[in-house]
Length: 353
Ligand SMILES: Nc1ncnc2c1ncn2[C@@H]1O[C@H](COP(=O)(O)OP(=O)(O)OP(=O)(O)O)[C@@H](O)[C@H]1O
Ligand code: NI
Image (cartoon, rainbow, N blue to C red; front, top):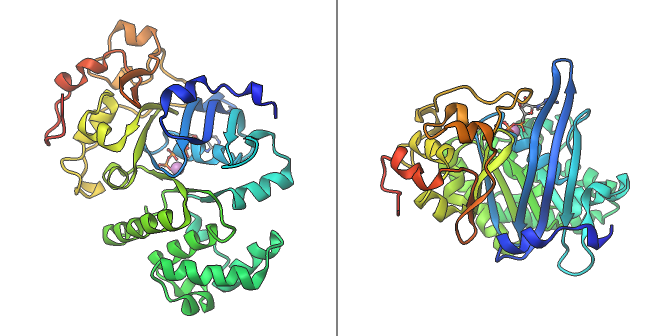
């Protein structure tokens, strides 16, 4: 692709970090009988090399659409448009949405790999774990013996017995073992970026935390960049370096995890935090946020959060807010972000302002 077509000015202004992926004006639409459904809306976001980026938002907000977009893997008949650029450490930037099918197949495993939402049920029950690894290695023309050695190392890194794991069939494994086998499989072709869509959602809290700890070590050891998607703010905020909060198919607040927790500036982020009395609260005890989740066919005018927002007024109904700078690298899409802390106080001592 032509380098000149990449708009980097925004990237420069938003990140001290070196971007590994930039997402620009990215949209996903479905043509439905009831009208056009707009399920990812004008996304502009950078993923920094080496970071753990947490994506958080309620069910149906577009988190999986964002993840799938990064690999040009939005399911038919979804229409993905925009510009997604991958920056190798050396070499020319790659226009992800312009890749040929065979290039994309390689990109999806060898550059940006993904643990899809609900993928635990995608294991073939008639194939051993070893055969799953062999299938992937063969399909990409990689050496089996080398690959299986890497698999053994990955299992050891994930605190699993490599020989037992490789010899097992999917039904013989617990949920935590299966999820770790998926993570190992997604890393077998040595990607630079690992995207995980709700990788721990089906597991108990203890297992979730133990997998997150292992992911830290794996990130350091293999120099990975991670995108971690969850509807569970306590889980993701304790794990990620940076957070991007999604509401109604777009990001509404982006920043360092500590800045967002300490100085949440979007009324929606504050509502999410408020529904979480403390960061150890299990999800089922969190209070729901009042109001209806947004409908992808009829987006509200102006700010999409205004129908649920205690700060919403005529300006919010009329004008879609741009990103305002709260602090270095901390941005929020709310006209009244400076008043959010007065209107929506938090019960635990987060606020720094
Ligand atoms: N195949 C499809 N056709 C039309 N609309 C779809 C399709 N798949 C998802 N959607 C819609 O796209 C929107 C975003 O869905 P998405 O799966 O990205 O949400 P999510 O944030 O990942 O939710 P969850 O936390 O439940 O996984 C939703 O309104 C959903 O109904
Ligand atoms: Ni999802």
